[in-house]
Length: 190
Ligand code: AMP
Image 1 (cartoon, rainbow, N blue to C red):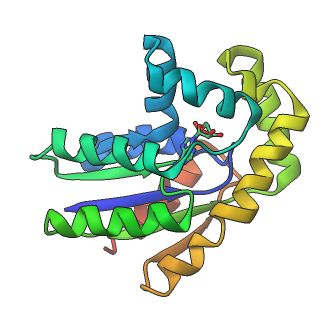
Image 2 (cartoon, rainbow, N blue to C red):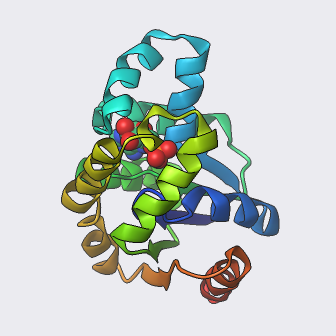
């Protein structure tokens, strides 16, 4: 199986690139942000609990997102592989993901980390906020909180995957096609 963690701060282009990679490599896209927004739209109790945190740009609890990923893995027993987008975001999520995959006799193949500077992230997210309908894209204070959550809780996961020799860092500035090509180059060596 090909199991990729597409990593990087909010606004780095993870969603855009995931959508291109799933077609080329025939993978299942698992975005915890998309799944949570689906729960909010469906009006579930989980969605209601998550919404307040998401609107502030805070992370939702580990057990919530780990449970969601676990059931998505169970629901796709014949997948060729997965792209994890926006997950894992904490050390507890990373170890849980390794354990879930090990139970299925597989593992993460690589972490592809997109690097984009903060000023560009803020610019992209505010631009996206004009149309995305996302409360967390509209306000610079909330965007700053999301970037801070990333820097403090999520970015350290690069060390976790680096220790397993699975980390590739890719410059996330350039055209969508240029970045896709750089990702393809790394994936094709796996
Ligand atoms: P995203 O769509 O990845 O930008 O995520 C939007 C929001 O959903 C985040 O700011 C968090 O509040 C929540 N979220 C998404 N994925 C996770 C995760 N793996 N762990 C905790 N919170 C998450």
